[in-house]
Image (cartoon, rainbow, N blue to C red; front, side, top):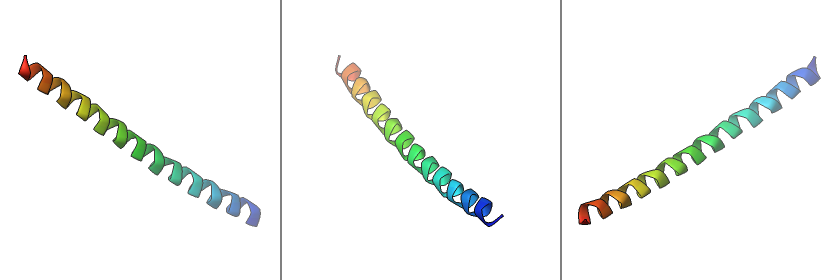
Amino acid sequence: MKTLLTTLAIASVIVFTGCNTIKGAGQDVSKAGEAVTDAAQDTQNRM
């Protein structure tokens, strides 16, 4: 029983860490997309 609880605790930490990493990556991709959109809008406004 002790081994099972330890395994579940370790698995929970790994899962929550992974979620935060994926969330951060998603935010980075979103910011990059916004930068591309802004650049495209600036280019279109100059035309």
